[in-house]
Amino acid sequence: MSAELVCPYCAQENAPQALVCWACSRDIAVPASLIAERDDLTRKRARAREDLVNARAELDQLRGRLRFHIRRK
Ligand SMILES: [Zn+2]
Image 1 (tube, rainbow, N blue to C red):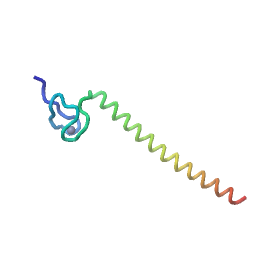
Image 2: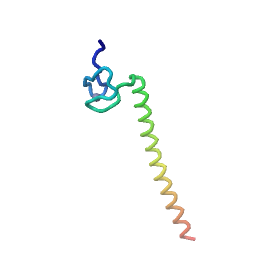
Image 3: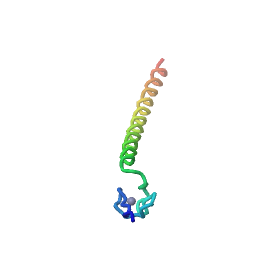
Image 4: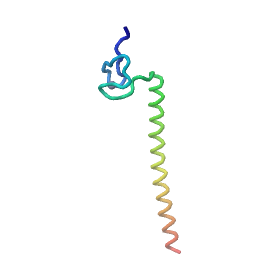
């Protein structure tokens, strides 16, 4: 008999064949290495979003400056 599957996120016990934790609804059917890889990608995505927000703010700033120069002519 296979042992209970313990959720790596909330430590609740799940059925051995469970795909999703009944307690926290996270995927538990994937190996730990894949979970770590996914977490890493999630972090990279969050950082990319932050960069995008910063780039947009910078662009808005440049646009504002450009508008200012055009108006002065
Ligand atoms: Zn869980």
